[in-house]
Length: 393
Image 1 (cartoon, rainbow, N blue to C red):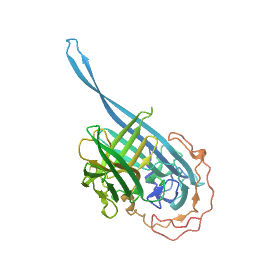
Image 2: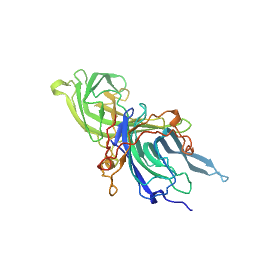
Image 3: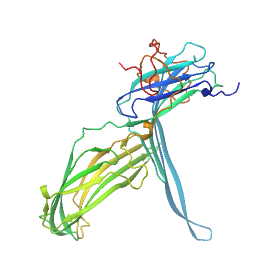
Image 4: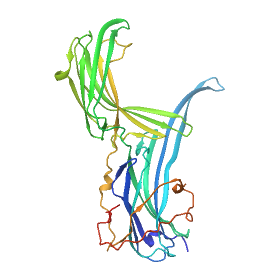
């Protein structure tokens, strides 16, 4: 018979009600099934949810060898390290048609399930010698009973935001240093206290920072004040080997103050740091705390003292913040509605993911489904394709 395309018989589409969700949040959405040709050997409407994490990077090692002629030669060896894990993978039967073939018609299957609360946030970054990815997807699929027919399926990427560790609040830090020059000549003390307006931001937000500087007991000028957003990206391979990539994402400098001078309260220094990565067309990536990919951010304000202070730290305040994933733009695009769309709407299916719903990609579980037998709701009037037509309980 040959390999038949499922699209010859109809199509399926899945859409969540929101483009992104926090870990631990309840996801709602719909599966839309449009079958216009009789004879497809399948009858189980499946909902699949997956989350996976992977990374790889390349390191170079140089060594010198001596040839038979006594000459030394320099060699460079490149080694690639990688890791991958499928940490979230479930599938359940939303509905089964008790017919040998999929019945011709239009159907809407509302669904609801809750994400685990400890899931890492979605992440993707590709550099010249590394790649890091944490991704999620929801998929609707009708598996064929006959392997010569391809499955009818559609998947949607899902953006998962990490739950905020604390409510939005201002942050504060302070530091006092004893300044000296030439390792031993005492130059007094310099003090800095900083207030940061928030503890989490969206890419493109402006971070407002206020710095109180007390240099009244110091003989050295504060030549400038540096503010920067620093990212620490940690990659881990399958053996536990790690690579840490440290980058200054954005920075700004303002004028400092002289020796013996205070700049506090009404005279405090203010810095506005626009959180935009000019070195990447993808902008600032979100915070994420996966097993193989971990991306964390810190805001830092540093008062740079003049003179030779090689043995001393500059007054510095450094606080952790979170970057929240933005709303994906592609989700705002309208969906193409089939002609004469007037589906039969099923009762909402509340899905509970347990150990019994977990699966591996190469497993064949067609005979192990617990088919939900919920009654059909009365046919609903046409509605905009992509909107849930019956409220969830």
